[in-house]
Image (cartoon, helix red, strand yellow):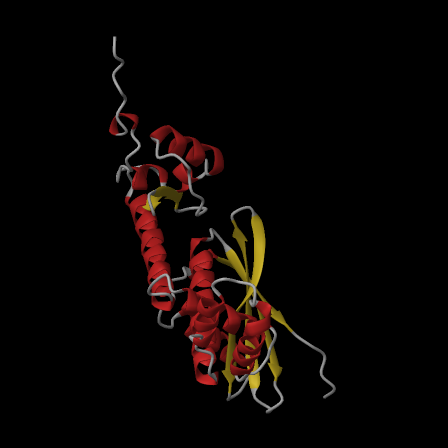
Length: 262
């Protein structure tokens, strides 16, 4: 007797929109992703999502009771942050363009090495000069050299790439801080080489299961640097466009002070 084949829908392998509020999951590229820790689950099955949610995030149902507006608003806020993050990434790479991706990688390495943006053209010329000998035995050598020639690495392009990467990193950091249950700040004020006071804001928060410390902002202070001025600059940053951080989660603020010779 022929056995009846089981359908995928019968096994709940199609993502159910109700799981967003039930388990704080959404679907990314056909895979369910947890909105709390941003981990994906391999198989789209309700039991897998429930098991992940109950084992890794047992406190979520207590903080955000099922069916409550608090829970719905929190999940909607996470979804909005995720969509904003994806739109930024799509803005950087509108298509699977290997040449564009490579130029971003080169710009990233130039910025990490603290080299000037003009190094991009130097790198491109060096790579093109080496290509003939480096890929001489490759059958697709001509295709490789053509790809190298398409690299856009002028100083202005490298600058734009670095700014786009910087904006994306800040967006991801703000997203992580917004997701955190609590966070703390450390403020440091010092004067740069041009005699302009700079306020550095450091943030510390719990990211999944480890504490993360990142520089959140560098704010020039062209006026006075009294306590009230530092506080005003900090609040101006958090109230700025694109910021959605709940300051009620802020548990402490540390102001770093240094001994001055006067």
